[in-house]
Length: 109
Image (tube, rainbow, N blue to C red; front, side, top):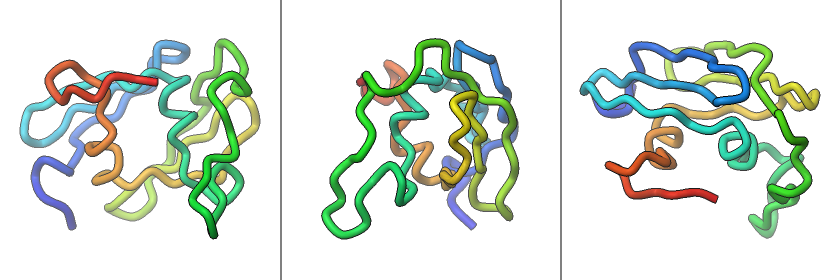
């Protein structure tokens, strides 16, 4: 299991606004849906040999939003997107690493 900083206590879908995660250490952030969909690391979105992204932000439909979020053990979530994409797994440590909030200073895109 990850550190306290990498342990979410609440994950909430905000539709087009994105996904809000409240972490065990008190940090809270909203991950914009377009940003998070673009950060998918599955084999359909990132070439497994070269690491090159296969999907570009401009290819993601406007108004993208999560349709469901499923726990994957105690380490990740799978997000089903309104464009039909559902093969990505977002490990908690990865989500914390890509946090786009001002405090974490990881602006997007």
